[in-house]
Length: 482
Image (cartoon, rainbow, N blue to C red; front, side, top):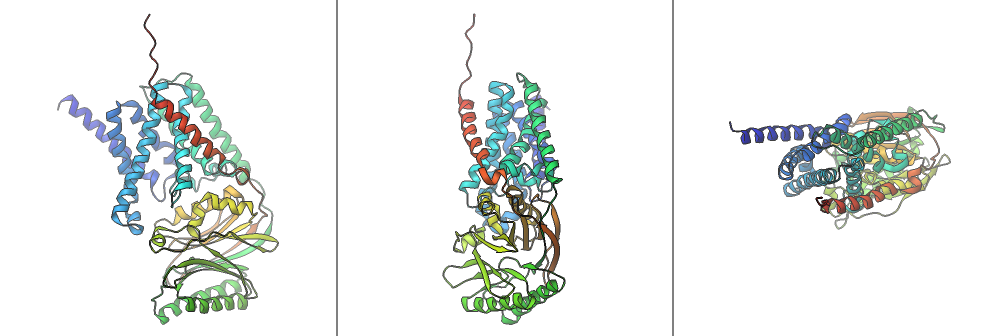
């Protein structure tokens, strides 16, 4: 075997190996610890090889890694859209890795450790603001169970979490690369250790704060079986009767508020009116606050609602979904634009539906309205993304200091406190369904720094990224020989 072929095979091996490891990073339930380490391998490849070699190695690894979600994407999108989505994700990884390595190699200074995290935060911020799915799948959500780190979201939002998360592999890649010796490298490593350490200390103190407030017993119910407009009367009645029974059972156990999932049924307008009366009767007979997700299809423009009924049976509040999932966009669902809170027990309770809570800007709107708890009917996809969607919603609670009550079909029933601690969680199931009863302390919402300033850190990163990209394109200055 000649040396060139041997070198190529070694490079191919490392590229494939990095791609396999990256599948632990970008999947629907990533290993939180891998996200701190695995990207360092890609960045090391980029700074340790000639540009042409680095490009194909990083490209191959990125495609192998991002293709982990192929089956999931196929559930919600046509094949061409799936291929384009995976290709776009891979290109984003390539762009950020290669742009970062270019600046690192060109300047070889301690401050280049910040290029990789700044580019990620900038890209994440722009996706959140511009794309219909926002920054779904952001690396920051990978830390969903790493509560010490997540507390930084109350200061700088998920941009702060993502910056730390990308800073560590950037420092590791510079340290591991024999080809790169940065000036004042000790500053890069020292600042990294300081920032991570400070965030962990802050998280420790946040998680040890006492939670004081009113006690509320929440009930959650989910039945995975769908009810469409063409469902037979007997089929629909079987499911709706089971919801009635479970609501009554939870109320008998002390539930004060019960949340049902998104679109427990999609009804024609006349049938929706009948279901409204039925839910009203459930709330009145059981003397509970009752929220349910309802779809209404009039044959022209479907709508997706959450209805909140008071214990006297009146319709206290309603909310129309703002952000549609891909199948809803294909069906041209109408889009809501109102933010709904209702005063319960002296505290504002907010309403949102599933994908709405993927958007930090919407979550912040409820923080500014001083919501103490968010009631969130949801519907996930075939049990595949349940953890990710639940933790995405929990992130909004940490950012803005409110509790979350999320009842999902084909996902998880989750209750969390304002610091992201999961008070209780169970998977949903098909008929006869699944119920959850949770007694939680609901403190008054105290606006966080993030609630006050929004994603300021993210937009500053966009500006910094523009500077880094500009100087990365400049030709290095060559000193004249003497």
